[in-house]
Amino acid sequence: MIRGFRSWTRAHGIRGAAWTLSVLWVGIGAAASGYVFLVSTKTVLDPTSPFVGIFDWPGGNWNRAAVAAAALAAVTWLALTIPVLIAGLRRILGWPGKRLMAAAWAGAWVGGVALMALIPASVASAKTLSPTANWQELVIGAGFLTLAAVMAWILARPAEPQQ
Image (cartoon, rainbow, N blue to C red; front, side, top):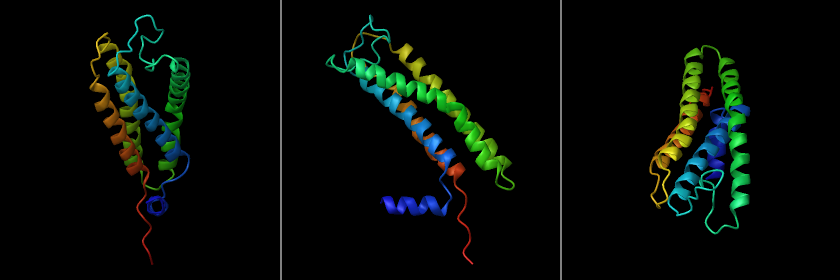
């Protein structure tokens, strides 16, 4: 399976900084929305927590580690936002006649930024002390996975014709 994926990525020219940064950016977003959904299904929402309980892991012993990991992921996620745009545009604009693909990359990036803004908004709309699942996060996570496919498609060049 992995060999098949590697050969497909080589044939379509999917590699490099733009692809790596976009996978990290979208992957962190999907993981964040999945984590927020998981936490929303538990009765761990503590109004005294500095993060309104959204990063509190059940059991209490993992709270510090979960907050530290979430903070590191959030900083990394925000720091990757602009480099993803720049790396993708730099790669695509190096191809002849790819201005439309560059516009598609910028549009996909704007969609990713919109999904980034939806996570805190869905957390704020679901603040409750009851164990109600935040189903909006599953939709946001699916949006991030779709965005990953779109960004990979944009970065994929057609395979070179064999002579």
